[in-house]
Length: 283
Image (cartoon, rainbow, N blue to C red):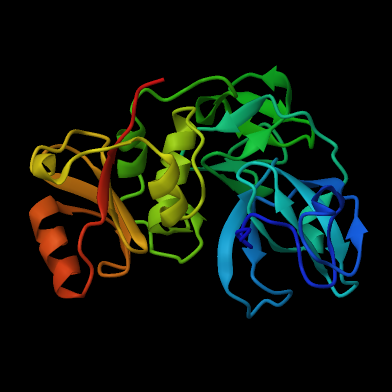
């Protein structure tokens, strides 16, 4: 059965390319849109009260299949394939050709070449922008926003240590479905950190467990290496070394570093044992 999180199909409507593969009243071609907001929620239903499943970051592309006329658009993120409802106001017809990405945990976009100006917006790590020229210490986007040069890098720049990227989120509040320094969840932390290193990862922890790395035999779980991913049902953590992990979790309600053994014992006492440990192969 197709995973509804990754399949743009509902009983009343589905993507045209799924015709003959799923049942739906009608099939439609999608229209590509660009995320113009710094962070756009992707919700399970067209309501501000609906569950937040994930977030789309500025510059991402979304294939939209339905707009309900009440401020919501239903479609699929092109980055990781996630399906959900986004605010119509967060989307525009594609107008940029991203050349750079934000590499700071957060940065400000100013309306002119001065840090004394009130920021036009705040952009998260991983947001994508089109840089059209440089003015002193600023890079200028196609929206005429001025970003500090040291906070951006070309799209093909890769961080050499995704664990160090994850560690930068320590103290960030836990947010189910979150993917930024304003709020992040366990699998969002893994996805964002790996993306900074040029590694594509699925969105949710069960998807990551199935798709990433090579399984380590349980007999070797006491010899973890930096970058190993530890999975429980509904949770994932990143090994910093043989003794500590970094993870976004509801126990701390934040991204935190803690001893691996203590975390495993605490989570097991709450009813969940480690299901697997995966080791990533360097690309």
